[in-house]
Length: 171
Image (cartoon, helix red, strand yellow):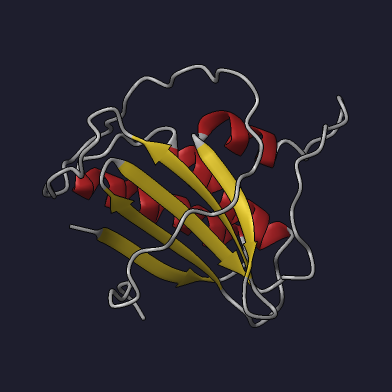
């Protein structure tokens, strides 16, 4: 069974924050660990709102679970600006987002879409290797301890998407 969640959001700081909050609630309803996924969503949504912003054009957050893998995709309308990981200046306030995504995700990458779009994706594999059963939302804070990153990860070619006959919610 493929579980999915999709939403269009404004490319603003408020839209990026809403992406993180909505993803957190969706992960909670699926019974998945909140971290590192919500941190990855926060970084990718913030990048879409900061670097992928085109006035009047929204960005899309898509979460789906296949087997034991959660895939996070953020699609914006600045396909002319493909992101790349770079070393941040020591005193700089920004520039560490993709390094953080690379450290937290098992795999990540960038896929150019139909002009003018691009999708930045990240995957987190859960140790159980199975899709969790849906759970009702629970009140209060929950989460799993964050594991320390192990080594460098570079972007990879995107794995195949779900079968074409499946539609994502919200479309």
